[in-house]
Length: 136
Figure 1 (cartoon, rainbow, N blue to C red):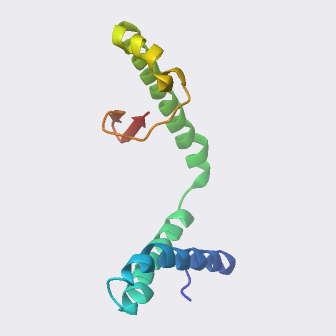
Figure 2: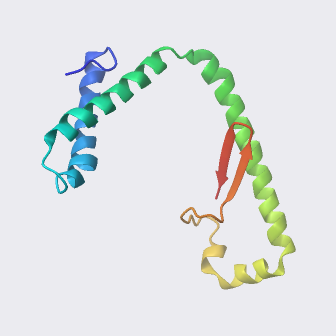
Figure 3: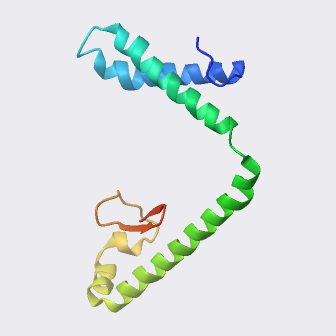
């Protein structure tokens, strides 16, 4: 088998995951279209292995200390600040809209603040520089 990460134990796990991906997400539907085993056994496997190898190389080249201690902390703080601002904005909008107060009383979903729904085009989306936030 192909060397992916350079660590034999990790490579065994990665190859097992790749086998499951091909079995569950490729072969499950492709076998009904064609009997060409080269597609899943060679082409798809090579593409996935190349992708994993590239990811492993990027991970090896990452400077983890500055990433975790500064960039990650700054990104988390920015996200938290924007999330709170969005919550305040939604709360202010709902407080000003009499229809929303009426629907709070009528809808059992509105009264349950922990209810999570599927994403849709009505979700509040923020684009800020390189960041993209979807608040729901």
